[in-house]
Amino acid sequence: MNIQMQYLLLSFVITVILGFIIVPILKKAKIGQIVRDDGPQSHLSKSGTPTMGGIVILLTILILSIVLSIQYPHILPIALITVGFGVIGFIDDFKKLVLKNPKGLLPSYKMLGLLFVAVVFIVYLQMGLDLGTEIFIPFTDIYITLPLWVYIPFSVIVILACTNSLNLTDGLDGLASGIMVFIMTFFTIASVMYNNLEMSLFSSIVTGACVGFLLFNLKPAKVFMGDTGSLALGGAFCAVALYLKMPLILLIVAGICVLEAISVIIQVAYFKKTQKRFFKMAPLHHHFELSGMTEWQIVWAFWIVTAVLCGIGILAI
Image (cartoon, rainbow, N blue to C red):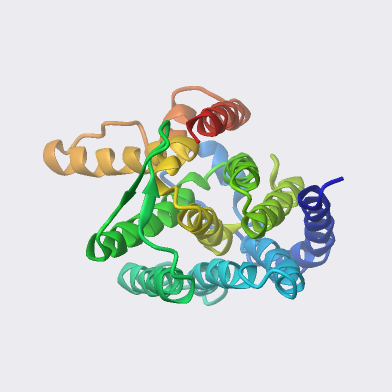
């Protein structure tokens, strides 16, 4: 058994153990999901389901990254950046669910926090690792070198897009966590193909954590990851993509997240112009729900599409 599989399984086991400890605590503390009245009626039954379960994923990633950093020091900064995004999500969740502030963290503060973590990570890549500004073009053997003044804002946009798109995707039981399993499996394989042991180990840890979390998050979900998990995981796969110099591959392997984000942009822009809705509801998964598909059908369809896209991603590198 190779080392990536060993740590994937270890990550899975630790996540399950932490889940059995933390989920009942969240439930006892009544840190439950607040469901929108204007959303799909089937979601009203989810009200009160423990949220902030992303803590389980973050703890697993942090524990194993600290252990691995003794031998592989570049893993810990990636893990800390992931935790940084998770902390911003945690603050938002905490204000909404514990302090009962329905607005949560103000969008401007939330974006400012994400921007700060993103800039810290980019500075680390350029000054700490001297990684350079090359970007791989999918389906070619070509790397293009961006000027630093282009690379920095480009990377910031990629990071903010990734964190927010996964956050939007996290709307059905098991949807975001299942999609992350496929995306991080792709990055594990890609890292192995590029002989990057550290990123393959980190990706395998995140994969195992997402598989473990799925046991609690599958329909009917016993816990939701909340912004704590979705922002952290969005940051995780984006960080690995930038580290491997392949952010453009995200347009392929994270295609579902891209479509979810685009659906929201279209909905908002169309409504402002016409005062009508383009989709029955955004993000896209809610449109399919209101069109008659069951939650399971949508989740499975999006998983299958992501698996196919990740396969295409392997061919693209």
